Length: 154
Image (cartoon, rainbow, N blue to C red; front, side):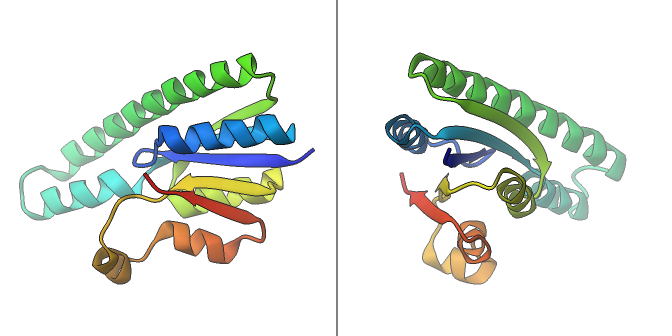
């Protein structure tokens, strides 16, 4: 059975991408693996800047950082429950995963473990200049995997 990996994260929750993944899984009779990445990098960059500027202290940052990650985990689980309900109603086999870490590391580990055939992901909206200077996790993902990666732009 083919496996389709739908990647969601704190900054990637596209309904368009979800619909596409569910439609393909249904049409191809494939297993849908729903991955929600609780990405450390997003809040870490913000808190590092606030700490450097003296707005918050190191201990406060740790507590706040963990609270934010907990909230992202709850949001991820809620989103997954919505998708699971749709998958059940359409008779799609599915597996759900919520993992904390950096986007690329988590995705690559799941791709390897689950041996997926197709990845669907939304690219965050950013300028070309921003992608040039800071890189793109999705572009890097495409370079590192052997399966097809479909990028769904909003």
